[in-house]
Length: 136
Image (cartoon, rainbow, N blue to C red):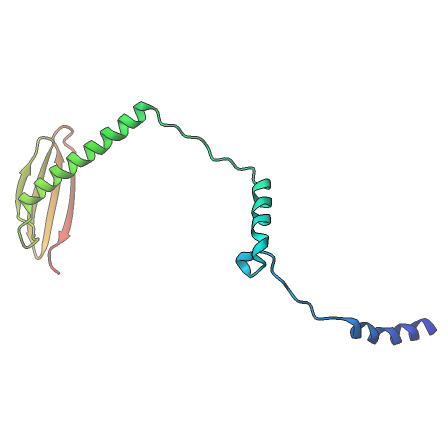
């Protein structure tokens, strides 16, 4: 019983010695001491085991990239030239057919503000058709 009595007497005394917990950030990015920055960076670099993979392009890859870029530029100009023949100055589509060496582009006005555009590949005969609304 006396043991419990001593415990009850010392229990309130522990709260008198307690202090409030305060948090002090270490990382300078979050309000810590700026002098910790180099130390934290050094520790992070020391434990970082990642190395970036080394990718080298062969001359053939560079040549292929150049050929792809050139082909894209030429196709862009061809499509711009074809569009000049099927789009009027107001931005509307002109019904008709535009033929290039590889493709046949057909614009058909179906009425009620619906226009059909068909693109046919001359070598394979494959056709791609879609409809758009010309009404705003």
